[in-house]
Length: 156
Image 1 (spheres, one colour):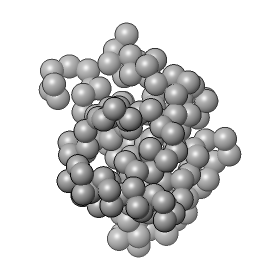
Image 2 (spheres, rainbow, N blue to C red; image 1 turned 90 degrees about the vertical axis):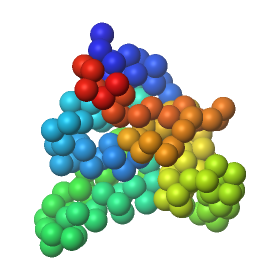
Image 3 (cartoon, rainbow, N blue to C red; image 1 turned 120 degrees about the vertical axis):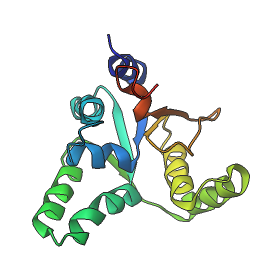
Image 4 (cartoon, rainbow, N blue to C red; image 1 turned 90 degrees about the horizontal axis):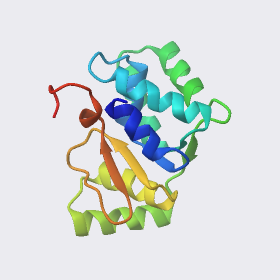
């Protein structure tokens, strides 16, 4: 089994927060990371992994289609996020923003990273899948960096 298969096996049956990177790499078919994120998306679609993300991740994913004026692409991205029985989309309420501030204060995270982390914690996630090197595991949440799941020595 490869690294991605091992990671998916560890995440099976668990609540997993997917950061913006997962969606951007998947929807853009990123040549370096698509082969890693596609099985994660498939595991969420099949129900093997209980997938979560936040409204902020969706907004971040929509930036490029809006920058390029590609409203049809933006609409297809919204359809992707709105699929039935796919992801649990977490709203960012006052409690999450308060936890975001605490995380920024204690861990020195950038605001958006702290917001994603806080959202994952509030959703009861055990894992956080990202490619942001500034986000580290804690006793509450295990961070899985996408770049570490690429088979071969290139990203190790």
